[in-house]
Image (tube, rainbow, N blue to C red; front, side, top):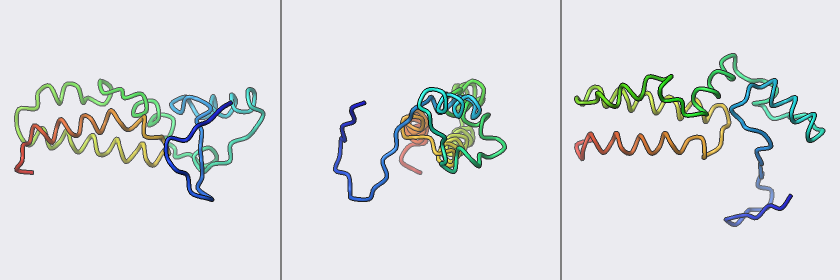
Length: 125
């Protein structure tokens, strides 16, 4: 395996790699790590996942906007109140992904939708 940094890395800074699709069920990820790479994950997210971890990773990690009801909500977002509700849903998703330890690539679609939603609110907010 060859890894190249795209920015300067400080001494002692942790570097992480995704060996598996982080939206897979926890049991599947741990089994694959053991079987393919012969190691056991000891990160907090592997050994002490939240009770909602698998569901959260599958829904939010796969950007299943339909399952979250976001597609319908945003398509009907005609009022400021509905747009604000949509923004709150997006922020909740970003927080859940951060709590699950999912990387930036999983969060990016939410940030894009957040920017669009804030754009619909206009400069007032």
